[in-house]
Image 1 (cartoon, rainbow, N blue to C red):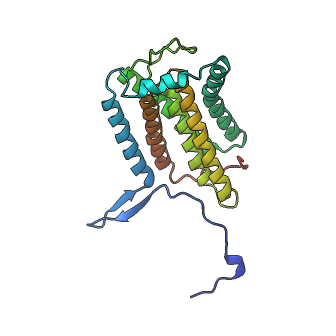
Image 2: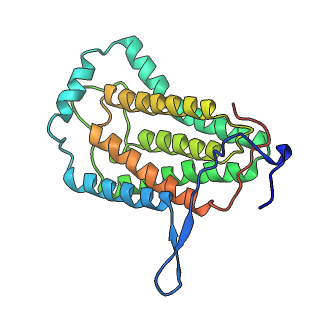
Image 3: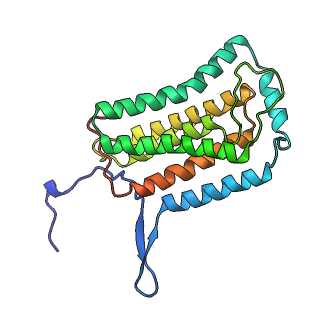
Length: 240
């Protein structure tokens, strides 16, 4: 056994996320195994289950009560804040893509574009297929002509959040510290949750429509991560 010198030892942890691997199956065949594939299957199953349970435009038990409770806190400033939070999803998506383009990180740009753009098209197709009407509980301040299932803002926010997390997790440990990754994870949870609350506060979505959007986004981004599993997705400069 060859002894390692000081220069051969790297104490920094490996933060890269194993998107896919394979195992030896009976008969000598290699079978693809991946946490991303598992996540995609589970999320798709949950999405279809939500779609089946929420057939029609009627809310599930307690959903309308939750929206009415949120509406008790309605105010002009609250409406403006909720609208700004809703708009921030598109703004952050554009800024993220622009930042990656400026850094000339073309593979990373392609990955995020596939996550966000692809999930948006998938959500639009799902809205047309399921054609669920939006809640009609009060006169809303933001009118939308599109269908409500699944929530497009929930899809886009979750797709961007998970896509960025996967992108950052694939960077070398010398560029992304565990503390930065943990902080980013917390910020992602807060941001995605804020978008969900804002959409329900505005009376535009029931919780099940939000949850359906999240599961659809996770399923799609997991498939994109599997598709880009062999791409290094380097960043020219730190996104921090």
